Length: 195
Image (cartoon, rainbow, N blue to C red; front, side, top):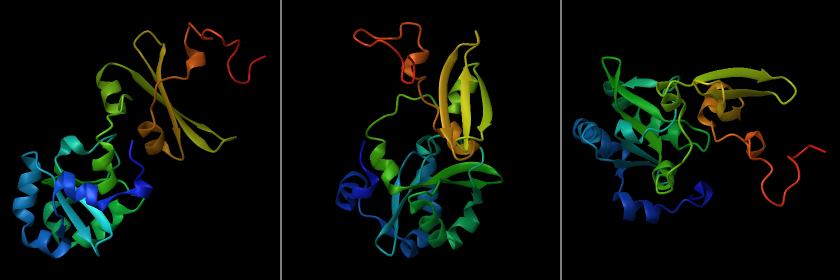
């Protein structure tokens, strides 16, 4: 996985081409959005250090519930603000829509580099579609929201935690090894925190 703190814009240019400035992207907005709908990615930069990608919906990872949905026409006029918003290290993708239906996404540039290392963690949407149940709870001691997915038989399939429900759902990961029936592994005697 590529470290976003060491993001190489040269690598992005190599992978995705020379970015459009916000002004150039506004001038070509219709064709860029249509290109994203047809599977093409366009890089957009604001002040040469804030980078975002206008991407097809298939490249907007994670759970879409709760992400901002901005009409395409309004996004054009607010493009500079949107690039700044998604480029922030803690920023989230923005969905672009027509008639309240997402048609493309705007994501942070580092996400496009991170895609080179595919995640093996199931997304919350995929778990739900697969028949799993996801339970959210709050742990007041840690100040975290916990998300736990169970399969149809009630076995824990995935778990995640975060500062809020959105982060917890996005953090769904494989269950810890000590929850597996074959734990402990060879050479280990107990789970962390146990005897």
